Image (cartoon, rainbow, N blue to C red; front, side, top):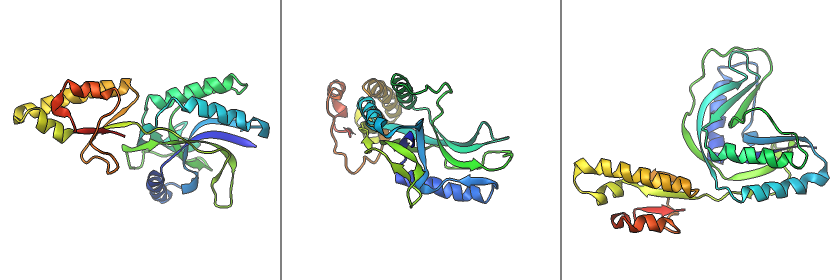
Length: 257
């Protein structure tokens, strides 16, 4: 059986991309377009695998992913491999979140240590939306939903063959990544640090960058709101409290989820 490792895309983003694919169908001929159920981010194609190795691969993936949080990405521009002048594959690119290529590189290295061939091509995070059936030339990239934020929360081992509903066959349980985010209500920051209008923006920028440096070094993602997500309470936890203690005016202006 042929297997590959993938990150699953949230349903709302798949719906958005499916609508975009429907738009592309009316503008580009000669392409076999991907369906809603098949949209994903391929991390590693494994090829033909004996059933006896599935548990070994699943355990490796579980161990490796345990030290990673959810991958925050942005949906970027429409593109083609090798290019849009003579594409074989059409795709939607993803922002270069440093953690996703890092994870994929560690995955390649770990799999090579147990006998799998290492991919030498540079990893380009993307979502395949179509496979070209004949020679076409796309002069310019069609407009799309550029810079839409999303989060990759689930990793999975999938079988290339499809079930009756057109979905890839799941060959292991989903591995859910931790979604560690720090949400900062920037309006509250601006109001509490200094009531004078001329100082608000500068103070907010300085604090934002200070927290961004801390968050990045601690494995968190920093996000600006309002509003805060409905399932988050106004709180800070863990070592982030140290940062807040030295700026008492900022207590209760953010949350960790």
